[in-house]
Length: 149
Figure 1 (cartoon, rainbow, N blue to C red):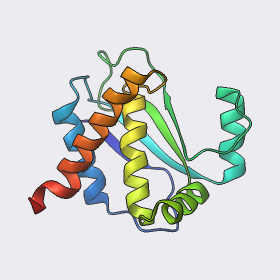
Figure 2: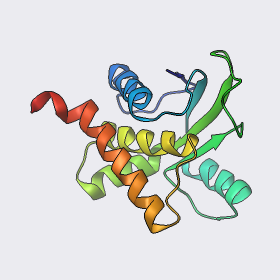
Figure 3: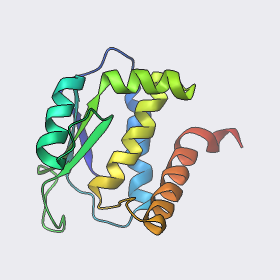
Figure 4: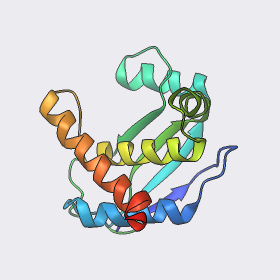
């Protein structure tokens, strides 16, 4: 299972047990080797807009950006940082209000989504979107709802 490190923390609460469970379910559900590290970073809207413009040529703010630093994870060790997940706290806050969720869950939802991007899943085409959406639902169910059924 890959490890995660918070570089900084947002103003809302994050339950690291939930984050750990998300990573554990990834190990079970996604067959790509995951014996490396990922950094989790929170920035403001201006910073993520600058990153989005620089790396994706999109001059707009976004909720999360996923950066993987290798084309193949097979030769990485548990000490190697394979990628970073850059979250915009302001976007998370506005989206949880818009979608009727709570901040913490909006973060978990985006964490699952961005981890799939780190593992090269995408949603540019309809069939890719369906595969990615299905995995997001499976992982969220395993972490948050399975114990209630």
